Length: 337
Ligand code: FAD
Image 1 (cartoon, protein in one colour):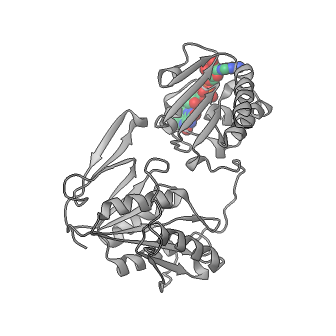
Image 2 (cartoon, protein in one colour):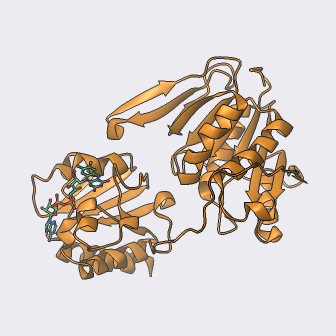
Image 3 (cartoon, rainbow, N blue to C red):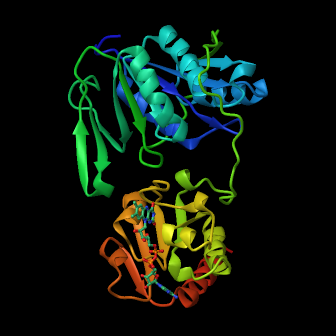
């Protein structure tokens, strides 16, 4: 594992419910850039469900520029077990000998990346939102990550010699584009030795958070305490549906029992970076901004013209959300129908 002009990048391509997550394709895009024109790109998919799903995921990666896709398919990997998944990625690291390893900055990615870095004897930069390749094709790339709720940005570079492990924040980097027909990569089964497990995930109780995954949603309509009740979320859900987005919430709304904590965005909730964030009846506390201030376009609807949320909003609407949101929904319906 060296820093040479011809680099090898490995992507851990995370799947959910047997399907590739979009952040896996964003990680692949980052890996292709980091490997450079002369470099090699490997990907690894891990699971133990129906083999067809993993093969489909592998085929998509191969069609989008992964030169080799390692498939680690084992019944022991049917459910997420951090040690087992880290070992599966370790098998791919041993096979590919990458100089850089890219994962999505998801719940699983955050758990796996430090293990992968420690096992590979490398360094780790988490939550990357931008990559500057510099002049040498990626070997001394600069990785940008937001700090203090997006009020500051840190730029990090790895010292030469050790493998670099990077997690990329969903919705920030472009997905890997398909390669020309006939240039698809190879797909190979990768043997895997199950390690002793210290922790086992017995099950995942999924709380209903709508049909669109909040962390990867392009559009989020979020409600705060100003929504006033569980029923008050209905107009927000209607707007989200018309826009093809997801519904989120402030902790104020969650604490008041208007919605499930699965929707909470902020310091102690989810970090989101959609293209459009519509904040309805949310005051804009610093802890809320921590989870959404990097959204590309922020629209705030609040009846208090002095609400702090207007300080970061690109567009502000001073008004009653129960009047404004249905008007927006009706207008967008007219546009889209
Ligand atoms: P409020 O601050 O009560 O604001 C409600 C807003 O709705 C007001 O601005 C009001 O003008 C407006 N409004 C009312 N009625 C209407 C109407 N009809 N139409 C339009 N506007 C209306 N918060 C988070 O969100 N996420 C976190 O992860 C988080 N983590 C935290 C961690 C810690 C350690 C602490 C101490 C706090 C955390 N908080 C978090 C809480 C945070 O400080 C705020 O209390 C919370 O964000 C406030 O939620 P809110 O904006 O919905 O409610």
